[in-house]
Image (tube, rainbow over all chains, first blue to last red; front, side):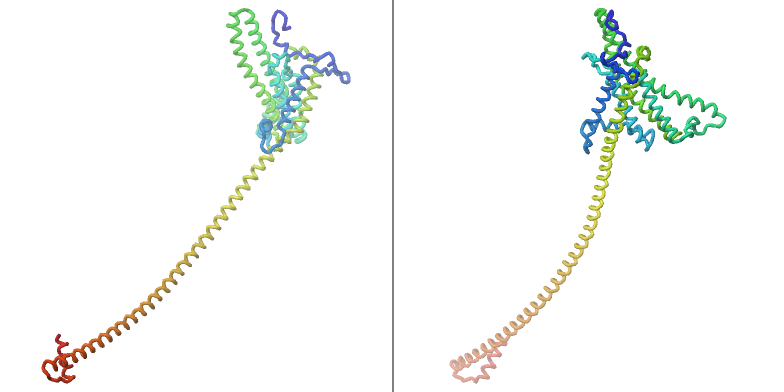
Length: 262
Length: 164
């Protein structure tokens, strides 16, 4: 625990706990306790809905909020259209939801609300969550692929122009790389978010312990760590955006595979 | 690592709440709001394109009208110039005629005046001769006591006048 011996446990921030003793819920024997993780999913959803709703004024000349929301939707729309093409519009709701949900979760998890006693929980640093999102994306790819192309979808594993003798070798490799997609998709986000939060926690423990150990250690260890933390915080904000973008971009790319084959 | 340590006890709750809240996000934001935002953007883009097209059409129309106006204007100007030239020529001819008439009248008057002058002069000369003849007769009769007949006196006066 953090309080013992003044030590900071960098992994403690990922602990899932019920928000209260009343929150131990069950549905049909399945445990659905309302945890801090669920609470921050709720906050993310509410903030995201509020943000988009504020920009959903449908004015001809957009105000600031509308401009912000339209930039975001326009950005995702461009990405989807660039990767999938004209028929990509129908995947925009899903890709936009995915992108903005992850983005808001990442950024909300970085907010320095701990100062006010509220501890943000970054649920994207749990592979249960990122894994589910990846599985949803992967399922959409499979559904679209088999729906549109039927068994021809399997030609995805034989790239265009592969010489006949190479097919037995190429196809398994392609198949493996295809099957690895949901794992890489989910793990990438989970690892990036967790690593950043652990790094910030470790550095902050350096600042706290260094300063507690005396003025010499404070200047020698605490101050540089603090400066580094400022930089890492900026970097983490960047990573929060990039990881959300990468997740959405790869989803769009995979959907493109299913939509257009090769 | 709580992600692994708590996996067994939390995964059902995690999955359930993620599906609930991501589902809400998808249906409310993704399906509900995003299409309307995109619709707004599309209609704006369409309106801008339409407005530009309308402006282009109006400009073309204005250009065409200006061209037509220019042609008409040129025609009008040419016609006006023709009219002016015609009026000028007419006026010139008229004034020439007037001048000629006036000249004729003047010439006539001048001639008449000349003739009158000549007649008057002749008459005056005749009178002078008569007076001179009378005077000569008178002078001769008084000085010499000789009566000179009128023809003789007149002849002498004439001679004197011619010499004189």
